[in-house]
Image (tube, rainbow, N blue to C red; front, side, top):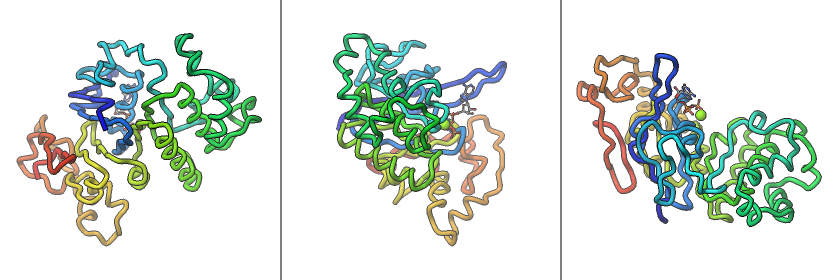
Length: 309
Ligand SMILES: Nc1ncnc2c1ncn2[C@@H]1O[C@H](COP(=O)(O)OP(=O)(O)OP(=O)(O)O)[C@@H](O)[C@H]1O
Ligand SMILES: [Mg+2]
């Protein structure tokens, strides 16, 4: 495997009037070709912001993001010479699919955003038919509108739309969170099969650890805009180091597990220090050392963690 995407020292600050929101700080992620990397963390931890910087929706405030070795962003300008290479599927197919467009128009739309020369190479009705069959839709669906479909079918439409330009990399932002559990499994399996068939690379965003375990080769855990732990799925699930990762995992463990219970019910306490560890407030193991933010250090091969302990 070789690196498809590299993020280094990436920071994103949103300005809200006179306030600034530090949505992402010091993010460093390497995404290898062909892998599924999971991004997990609670609401507001910065997962979607990372996804948006990778698909061109938000410019990083600082830092570097490269795609196949070349900068993805030139200050606030997104690289234009990647026709259709990077695509996305969002959580809520209800709001991400334009209700006034037919399924055919929705799926073909990303092709029309490409330069005409590239479009001709990638286009063709045969390809559209093969694609809709592959995602589990039928020819007769093409002239219908999104509201005529179930949540699972709508997500299949969104997947076909993402695949029409033959991308290499897809950001999947909570792609199955809005679906029933049984439908969720079908869509996850479809995504896994497509990765294999098309040699795709995914950034898979979720707050659900069991979905992450099912899907991902590598996992990055975020808390308040920082990546606090990153490693192979095996490292994270068998040898989690960060107390926050342990809390996330405790949702999968039995209720008798006393360490995780202790972690879950730790009394919050604010630090006076501006430079404290992001997890200080909720960490049951905090000491005075944690008033100083820990660096992101290697724990074992392919496993990094930001914690003094
Ligand atoms: N356009 C924006 N303007 C200002 N603040 C924003 C904007 N988008 C996101 N934020 C803030 O940045 C932080 C990170 O948001 P983000 O959407 O990346 O979180 P998330 O991990 O995807 O959360 P969720 O699980 O709820 O989707 C949050 O504090 C959020 O309020
Ligand atoms: Mg989000």
